[in-house]
Length: 339
Image 1 (cartoon, rainbow, N blue to C red):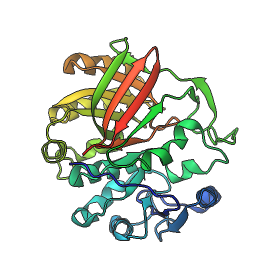
Image 2: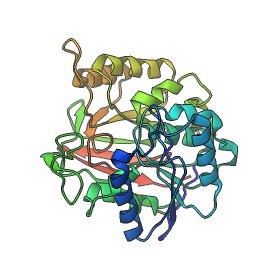
Image 3: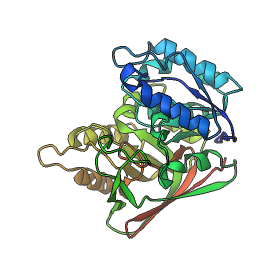
Image 4: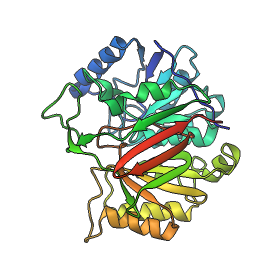
């Protein structure tokens, strides 16, 4: 059974730096995000780890884990959003008290997706892959990114529909020419599939950034089979994955590793987000990786979707039942918050 938190109007947002912290160079960006959230009617509590930063992480793993525990157990906090991703969230997993976790939304992507993934696998509490705190500082919010509030406000038993973006950002960050929407959405969006045809996929969403979630294969934190038995009772998994920095050979190795570990057993299909990575190696392209995976699993693969490191991105809920349809390059994602 999946447990779905609910975001209430005027909720308190807890910000804890589970990966990178906020250094002096980025203090103005973070403070602007706080102001924007407060203007939307939320209260913001900033953890002690947020303004720390040393050697690729905000603080030691234990300190990050304990601060996260305090926020997840604090009944006054309704939503947790780290400031952004990073590199070494994996260090804090051993310090998280999964047995005492209260159902509340945790939102983010990139390195944060590892935390989301493990929470849902271990507890059956739904988590949300979507914009980070720093990505929500724009004076205006594009329609795709802005759906995070509606998704997290959906009642258990309800459903929510999101449409593919009309345009996405042609460069990864676009800070050289900022817009009121923060991102420069200047490139037409087209969702693609293998085989190249319209598709409809159904299953329980599960996934994240492949760069980081691959590292818990074979550990107590990556027991997908337990999640399948305990929480979704054998329903098919609809995987969503996105690549931050891997070249195509490393991406391929990671996918084969996941297959060998049984992560793609009982799978209905695989969704890939847009990527600023996917650099071809020796002529091997990302599209060829997707075709190889589709051929050997005999499953549809859909790619260049609206999630990951190339904005904008939808909010996808780990554990939710989803119907994903692609027709003539346009996409619809309907998520059902069913137990």
